[in-house]
Amino acid sequence: MKTFCPNVNKFVHIAILSLVTLLLSCSGEDGEDGETGPAGKDGKDGNANVIVSDWMPIVWTWKNLETGDAIFDVPVENISTFMENGGVALMYFKIGSNAKPLPSYYGNSDYLDFSYGEFPENATYQTQAFKGFRIFFDGQPITINIFQSEPEKVGIRYVLVPADVALNSDLSTNSSGSFEEIMAVLGINLDQ
Image (tube, rainbow, N blue to C red; front, side, top):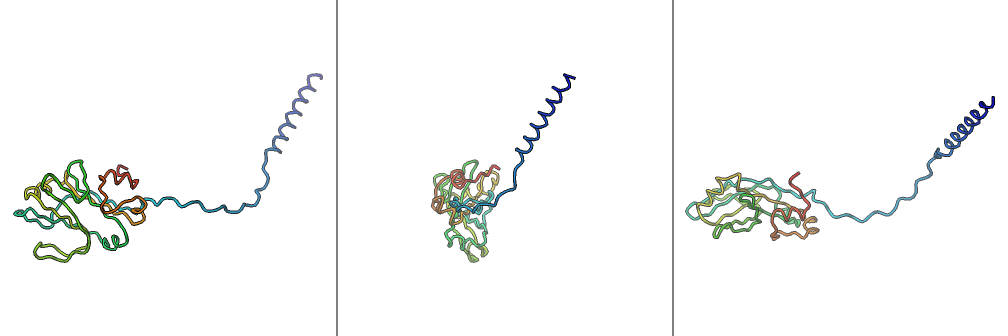
């Protein structure tokens, strides 16, 4: 009988310890929620509204192989309103893996520039009326055909930056950073 009492004693101690642990570990009812704290500081505007076009092969809307002049039209609706509201338009010209902002010289005498707006039909240039960007080429006549014949290597791309993002990132239409630098400033990773 002596061995029975110590076992009962151990059992009683373990049962009491378990009961105490169970009672102490239970949580009571939740109290009332406290007051809402002050609003946090506004964060920097993101880049969700930045528009980056795909690389477009150059397909001249009009060209003059005698003078070395050409036009490439890129339709973009509401571009005038976008720009009038403080938006920034950046245009890039790519040859191979090198992308340069427009306006830009390619070589010593080939010059590319762009403008935006609403362009009327023009019988002289045989162009239709449209809204968007017009890229101008002035240079060697042979370059006109080279640019158009190598769509894998040569292209045009635009970036539209809304006014608030442009203001926060110090960008303007005259920003001269490379395409990669501007994407880094805007926090855009195109490799994803």
